[in-house]
Length: 464
Image 1 (cartoon, rainbow, N blue to C red):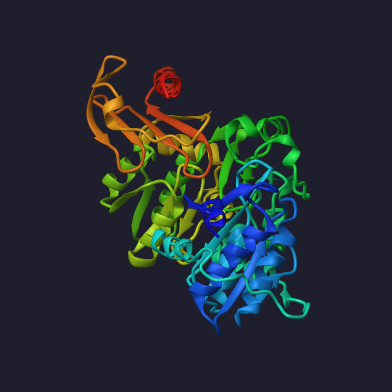
Image 2 (cartoon, rainbow, N blue to C red):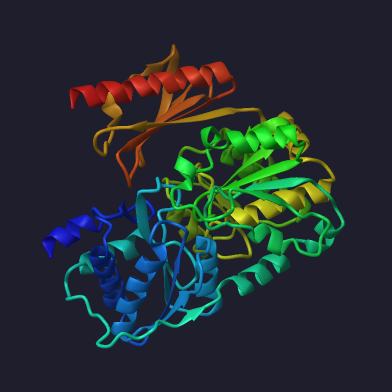
């Protein structure tokens, strides 16, 4: 079974692989058997899946293995967002959940996420335990072909979301909203949740398309030109973009202005603290914006910084009093819910913030930036030939004439300069890609920082 053990490898957020190569029925079953060995007979689990090619069939294969191991398993009766699966596990008091999804990865990928009994992301210790069980035991399959119990996971999820948002204040407000589901499983859930209010969002790219229209289902600016154009041309007050499994978000404001996830985290923190009057800490990942630091400092809120990967934020949400946590890729988790990210709920909270303040999101953002600083945050994704890691010795003591005053290397390399600008280089844990991040108070400077980091990556790849 050694070949299988190398094929199934859990990275930043579960196991992902190319369909038909390492992501096969055989390997999905091996992963499910390891989960079954981890759980033990008599436990309860749920399995969900997104709109990717064959996701439903892969989910059935995983569920069949769990059932053959004496685990009581429920399979979603339709494609669903990952947060819906997470909520179901917690709401029904199950022991674990499996979600078949590759999230924002290209269409040729699929994946396997594990969710804990609280609905949170599996911690590194848990996934390492599951990995240690890969191939230890022969895959068990049902002796006779029996149907797996299927159920609707969406009704309870929609009901909870309606109770979580301040429906009374939203109900009679009106803002023109456009939701881009990017052909993923986010579908039109926001419309279901807002039924009975004056706000009835319009939807685009919300029907399933396993090819995702030829683009990655990732809500980054270059993938959202159509959304930006429509928001500008049709004068929407807010555009919301969800990734392939609807656990990440980006937004577009009036005039087609892209709002990156870093700014969304800041807006959610301000809304929950100032409008809802909630308390708790804020969590950001290492490549997070300085604006979050300024907000936390201003209000005396405890700020946590984690490596990339929502599992680290999820863990803090289970052990600490956390108001909101967000990663640079758009995953946002909030207090009073599951310790997991949810793009739909984050979008609803932006609408709630607009309703509280009776202003469009661009006006609110402009006011926030006047108070806490305007930063230009950029990210460049570089496709490389193999997974790359970096060492601080590969980086200079000065960047663009600015002295590097601090280096953080617990997840990639982040170089912080004397004028508060910074550059970060980090290899992806799930695919042969390197991400270069930069932030400064000038768009031109941020672009130059990105170019500087890109050259370092290029030089390293050339030299092997």
